[in-house]
Length: 194
Image (cartoon, rainbow, N blue to C red; front, side, top):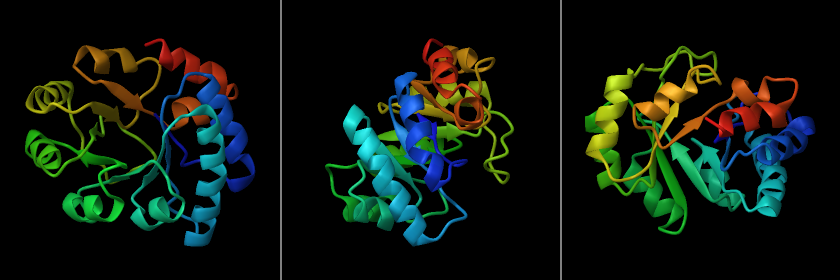
């Protein structure tokens, strides 16, 4: 899963295309510092790319943008709309991911019909400075408590990704480890092989 935090509208299509060609299987569009109109326009552009490659597009936090752009789903955190309300808004045919940092949050998210969990932050990250940290043992415990996929998030790169899979993660979500690299396709391929 690639998070698109560092992109501008001008570079979005090219970077997402390269990431997908390198093996990214889901794209999450995350844009904290742009207007709703800019976010919506970026979502439409990215959806054209992900649609071409048949890769799901998930919108981070903004249920309204996910619905307006007809994205494949939405990912929300513990401080966002309650999962049950998000599910009512997006329906049962869209993907809903929930960020969690412990087993209690994980079990609650699964009960509220989350399709997958984002567990973390696993390591220090510049993209979410207020993140709660999850250690490898807790990641393993979260995985044992739920039946849905668990995606490790936060500060992940090619050097530390392997230990997350050993701890039980079904997948990883990265930003700078792909989008911050000069050769995006190669960086994505390197992580896809983990």
